[in-house]
Amino acid sequence: MSNEIKIINNEKRLHFETLLSNGEFAFIEYRWHNGNLVLMHTLVPEGFEGKGIAAALARFALEYAKEKQFKIVVYCPYVNAYLKKHAEYQFLVTKNEVQ
Image 1 (cartoon, rainbow, N blue to C red):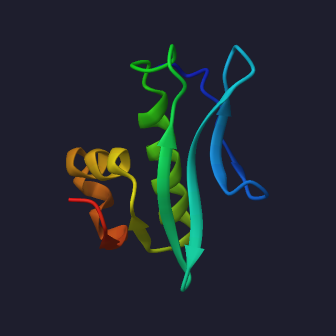
Image 2 (image 1 turned 90 degrees about the vertical axis):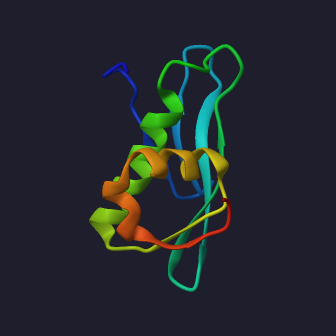
């Protein structure tokens, strides 16, 4: 994965996002519910898939939750798959809606 991926928390759009070279964004959409960070959906535009962008976004979102001591609810299939490979973040999960 590239160290060039700069991810921000766009609180206005409720996205953890990165600006891509073509001007589009890759992002994880989130919501807040009962004080929990709810990870809804990951989107990486076609042509940018397979470059580690989704993994970087997932790691950023999970590190954000860890740092801020938020529990997470996972609706996003990609984040759910990422969590299965990265057990060190399982303690953050309060509810996993995708199996």
